Length: 158
Image (cartoon, rainbow, N blue to C red):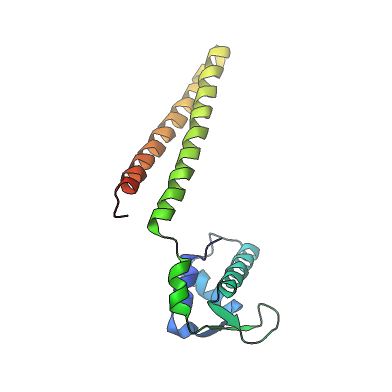
């Protein structure tokens, strides 16, 4: 698990030299909004990120209390460690490439099944054809994304 870039940006702010988990959660909600996570998921996410930051030596608890009442401080070598926690663009592109390839394979299987069902059940062809066309269009878009990422990965400067 990697540290979320927004969390790192918040913690990088000079006003976040010492903070609580609640303050980090509040700043994260202000930055990204509430629509991405429910309340419980948000708390779990922030706690997991803080544990990851602590594990990597970026922050430390100044008081050993419950995670939400403890005060955390950045360690002296924060900026050195911070750069190692961010993924390189090349790694992120490779992960996207793998994800898109998996989506494409899934879509191809789905399209093949719709085509097969059209042959087996001709009376459902009108209904199935629309879904088949939709999946085929999605596959074309995903293929375009794959080509863009492959061209970036083949460019040695990325």
